[in-house]
Image (cartoon, rainbow, N blue to C red; front, side):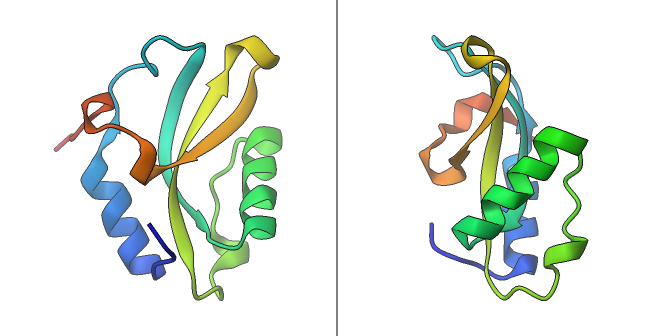
Length: 99
């Protein structure tokens, strides 16, 4: 998936639902599906803020034109470090839609 608008990213994230289970066969615990800035430097800063402060606040990035939808996971084998993957690489059976 390439960059999308903020509105499109929110719609994509909402349509995927929430994690239903951990990543099968790995030490990774799926925490959430979230919208983040598309540019790599901003994405990394967003993830660092999540790891440090526990926030998914996009206020700082609202003027950006390009966004991404990622899956945030906690890797239990590497000191609970937060890692991410692009939504397009995740399988749909790991998620459930909630009303």
